[in-house]
Image: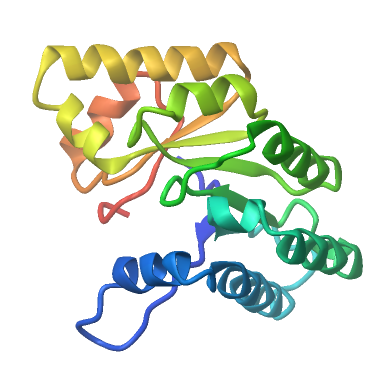
Length: 203
């Protein structure tokens, strides 16, 4: 019944899939620069909103960027320069590119959290590594992958899995967001499963 945060999404030319371009950026090693540009755009936007506004926005971080010394150092400098944005910018670690060094990734995540910037684990359930990530990365929010949420509405086994994800996160003190909630049925369904927030065309 309340807004948790907004998400900053990048759109390119009409008819061109953002997924294809992001994947290309990851394959060519350009994704750290891209991710950094999105953070800068996000800060520019937040700077147009009154400082006492509760609005917060999320920006995505590829697994490759987490492993990039350039990205980590540049982001750290940006966060120091824009300390006013703490609590108003959320970082979503995406699973589109796998995290290789989970220990180093967790150090990076804890540095952000300590500085006052919440961290979300995005696309949870999309890959086999999801539960391993959850066990080794301390985050504030878990966003459950849309197809997982859709499948849960079709079969009892799927529902049991979604409920177990919600319970596990609750026990770890992590808030949950279900993606692709596009109608009232989906909203009622994920509420019954114990999910805290939703994202989708319904809203």
